[in-house]
Image 1 (cartoon, rainbow over the protein chains, first blue to last red):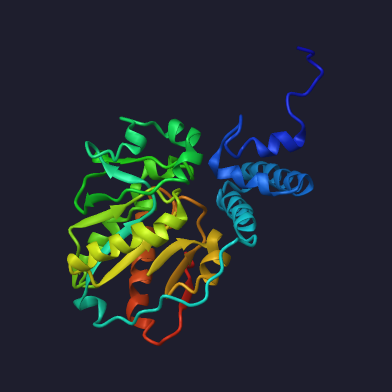
Image 2: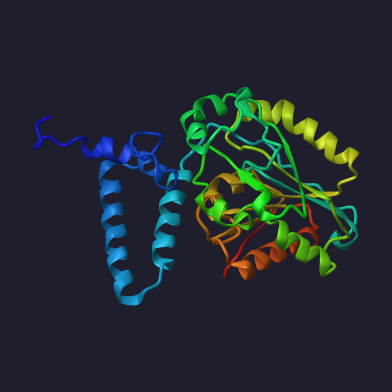
Length: 230
Length: 66
């Protein structure tokens, strides 16, 4: 190979973060930027990294990543909404039965939903099969609220799970909700939390899966849901 | 009640989600950074308070500030 030839053009480079050769789900949003936008973004990121040596805080870098992601997800989608799902609480939360539902892709060790029949699918495999995931119906995993962190597993091909691996509370707040229940904010905390892989067929989720889950929650006498989409 | 990263502000507000708490944390960590137990608790408490405060017939959106 000619050593003077670049492996990627800049366009190819910035697109490769989105399920390409340089896949990094924290920065997959670069694919939706023009080359100029991506160049400006990365230049600013480098400047902020340099500034770390002076003021030692990471907040500016965190915010820069946040703003990049927000810009990408602020673009117009194909979905339109004709009404809204507002439902009034029938009683105060302190008298209500609340359950937690997240799209984080958590499950308990030993209860792997085994997507596509695959045992012990790795995160890397989930990322590689993202197109299959977004065409498929999600499965709901039940997670006892007192599950110790070391018994939790997480796998989701749509976002960077490193933070959830370090601490499930970043998007599956079991401890924080138990704390809220102990302080009397919640009448009754459902003994199980629920999680699914949000990277799934949105049509099937809306038209089939979610209505089934709602019936399930009603059967379990759940009055309200704390939903944490990821 | 939805707790989500403010990354999704445009999409979630267009859905007119009934009770929405948007946080300043990036994708994957809507409740805050790993190990920041104090922030996780504050985000949950703020979210739970919206259940009773959003008692009108209009969606309520709040922004969590740490």
